[in-house]
Image: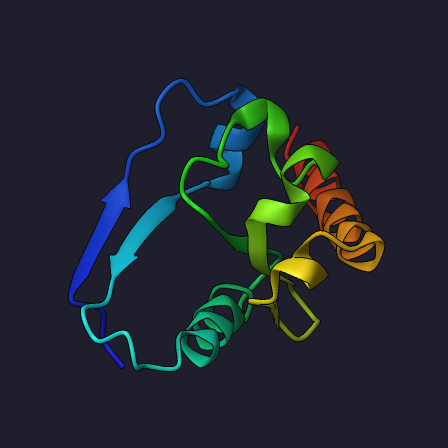
Length: 121
């Protein structure tokens, strides 16, 4: 499965600790809405987290801000995540994305991101 458009976005004014990690944002467009995008998202996250220490996530547009990376406030806008050494998690159900269990999973991913940030300092 290949996106119809693949647009990397340079992230401007990155905090120094974030910039050292190599945070990148991508916008992927698919014209065929019948595709299994959950499987694609899971495979993409698995690939990003396969080599070295990494944290990756997929989120709805408009949920990104440096002060809110994987915070409880945006947890319901994150629909997939992975951490090196674990299987990616992808969810489409809005009720699940708003659940306490989902927020707990996002908090664990945020803790992994915080560990990467502190190690890069």
